[in-house]
Every structure is written in C-alpha cells, then in structure tokens.
Length: 244
Image (cartoon, rainbow, N blue to C red):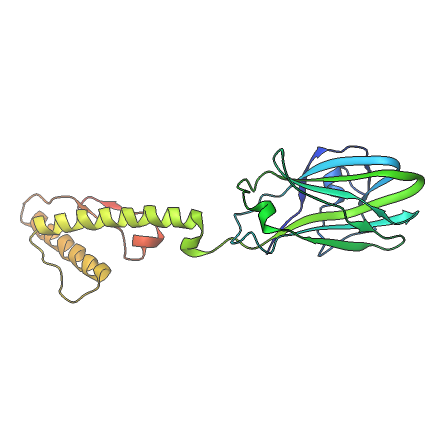
C-alpha cells in the first residue's frame, strides 16, 4: 500500500498552524501514525480553506482500493462537517464531507469510487483541499493529518516502467546476439548443439575469444566481437563492448 502524505503547502488559507512551521508539516504524520497533540491545523469562527500537495506516488495496480483519510476533532463546540476535495492538478476528482466529533480525535475514511479516479495519470500532482465554513464564533475545529492510500504499483512486466525497460533490454539482447553470431560465423565457430540460447551464446563467445587469441599469436588480425560480459547482464545490466 502506498501512503501519500502532504509534502508542500500550495495555499495555507485561513488555517492556523500549530506545532509546525508550515501547513503541510502540521498534517504530514499520516493517519496510521498520527501526532494529534504535536501538530495540527485549527480554525475557529467563520471559515478556513487551504490546499496541500501530496507526495509523489507510482501508478497503482488498480483504481479499486483507494482511500482518502482525514483525522479531525472539534476541540470546543458542536459536531461539524468539513469539506475535503481531491484534485489532480487543477482538476477536481471528488468532494467528501466527513463529520468531526467533539472532544475526541477520529479518523474518517472515504472509500473512493474507482470511477472518480479512473483517468488519473499524474501521480506527482495530487492535491487535497481542506475547507470548513459557518463555524460558530467559539468553535475550534482541528485537523491533525490527511493522506491518500493507494494500492502498490504492479511489479514485473505489468508495471509500465518495468515493461518499457524490459522491452529495451530484450531489444539490446537481440542485437547483441546477432552481433555475436556474426562474429562467431566470421571465425567459423559453430554453436554447441542442445544448449539453451544464452548458454550457446556464451559458448560461442568463449570460443570466439579463444580463436581471436590464437589469431593474434599467429600474427593474424582478429575481428571485433561485441558481447555482454556475462549471461546475467543479458537482462540485468548494460552490455559491454569488447574489442578483441
């Protein structure tokens, strides 16, 4: 599970910051590890509105299982609803109106409708606006943290980033194989029958290197052999260019 907490203050609004230097730092502990007494935002009388940007997330594996959480209380006064809005950049994704109780901190949870976030693509610019209005003169409204919970990013080829890198790596591998086979053919070194593709390639390259050493020793000119340093690097690392 990815937990995106506030990392930047876009608009402090009318919220009073307590126990922290900035708006986002007052509410960045996360609802799983809140610090209610340590830092919070407070509004009293009238209204308050402020916007924070959340930490950058990775594209999640699903639009299901998203949750928006806020932890709030009314220190003095009567129970009140607040308004929480989630944005992608300037585009509003959803509006939520959680109720905050008097005298006790409560974590309110919104299970987000997948349809509301189906089009989200920029996980570096997710924003939350916290708004409260029509507060009685002596009501003290407090928010200690807000965060967005997302499923983890997919692993392996299902992850777009991994898929792109794997595709590029396999393309490099194919090119490397072709070059190695051409070099082996020039040196008249046949591949070992019955071996796997990678093992055969390694065998060819080893034979090619040996042949090149022999050619050098006999005063002949060896042709370049382009190959990865090992079979592991065919997928896991950058290709090495060897001029033998």
